[in-house]
Structure formats: C-alpha cells, structure tokens
Length: 193
Image 1 (cartoon, rainbow, N blue to C red):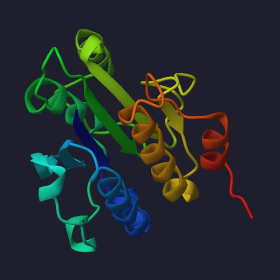
Image 2: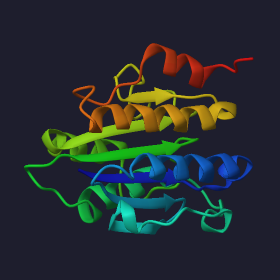
Image 3: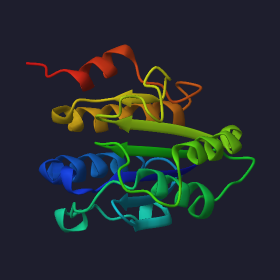
C-alpha cells in the first residue's frame, strides 16, 4: 500500500526540528516489515521531495540536515500538488496520505480549501487521509473525524508517535480504517507527567 507523508517545514517548525526528524525516522522504521512504497515530501512555500515512490527498504534515516524549516505555510498548494500530480492512483490499492502541520495555510495561491475538499472527495474511495494539525481551528478538516487529530505544539513527538501507531494498525488489518483512539487524542493534547 503506497504511503505519502507530507510534512510542514515552515519557519514555525524550527523549534520542533529534532522531534520531527525523530518522528519521521520512527515512522520509517515502523514500515520496514511491510511492503510499503514510501513518498516523503516537505513543504513551506514550495514542496520538496525527500523520497518518491521508493521501497521502504531503500530508504535511509533522515538527518537534521534533511529538515531545515523556513518560509510560510502553503498547505493547500502542497496538498493539491500531491493529490493531482504526485500520487499514483490504483483502483485496487488505496493510498495513505498523512499530513502533519503546525499552522493554517497562509500563502497558497494555486489551490483553495474548497478545491482541496473537491480533490479529496474525488479520490475518497482510494484515499486513507490522516490529518494531524496544530492551531487548525478545524478550518479544513474537523478533528472529530476518526483519522484527523489536533495536537498541542509541545506534544508533536506524541502526535507523531500515535500517528505511526494508528497507520500501522490499519496496515496490519487490526482496524478497518485509520483511527485515533480517545487516549491517543488526549495524550496529544495535554502534557503528561
């Protein structure tokens, strides 16, 4: 099952750089026993491919040099680019698209939230969409949907860990769709001692 991971690397993510790289490497490690094809993209004003349509076994761990946050948040443009040009749609095998961001779109000029919703609806039968966002105020995706989750900025490491767990449960057929549990949502919203 192809997996696409779209990660915010706008300037506000700089304080969470280490956690993001660690979280992405944990995700890649979780996929090693599966026959996944991985594509990893970073976005700010532009989309930067790190890995495209590659077997998980050919992926090396990321370093801090691979993730240099800067720029603004062109979330809709990045999503539109993936949905329309980068993702390989195959009717027999759904795609998983994971989106991680810490802020609302503030610089897209090619795509609107309405167009993104249309593209998601167009591919809904072939798409498992996971949206993990901070400071979203549910503008694009309501966090009440099972595969969408809001997290507190200081809990990005927890949010990435539970995202890895939720995707893995689906891939190993322990769940029929990607869902965050109530405990995972709670842990991503509050600091635990």
